[in-house]
Image (cartoon, rainbow, N blue to C red; front, side, top):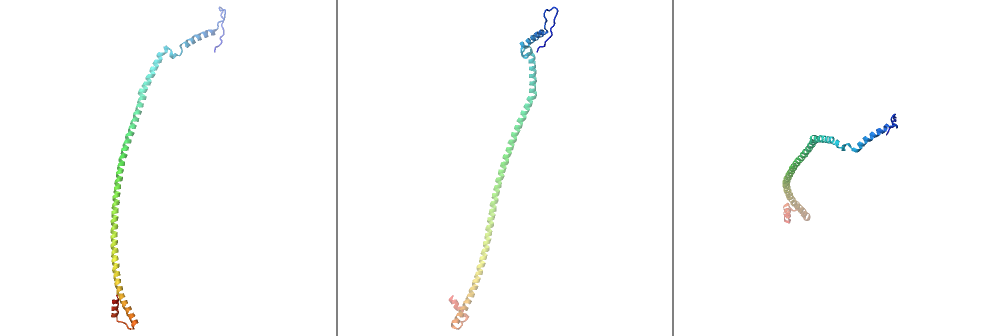
Length: 197
């Protein structure tokens, strides 16, 4: 944007001279200098300062990485490796303990099974012996009762047979008396019953 400047007339100059022409010439001269060089960072006279700054920044970054970030990363990696190694060792130890406990539990189960089998066999033998003894005792009691019953039956039979003979003698005596009108003696009736038997 250009501003209008007043013209100044001098007594010696036949024509007026514009001040803006002088400004335009100066601006054109300076603009031409800047346009001819391009970007300042690509100009050779600025390279030394840029290289110094680059080396300075590289040194700072190298110091930060070597002294701050790398040790922290190494410490994190070491802690991670130690944690993983500890976890693996703990897992192996727990696995070994679990295997040992499983073997011990298996042995205890086998021992308990053997003990229960032995206890069952002993109980079965004891029950069998008790049942046999009880059966023998009951058989002895039954045999004794049968013997007693047979003895009682024999006595009852003998007594009945004695009574039968007497009843038969009386019956025979009564029949003879009825038929003949004359009663036989007891000895004759008994002899007749014995002879008939």
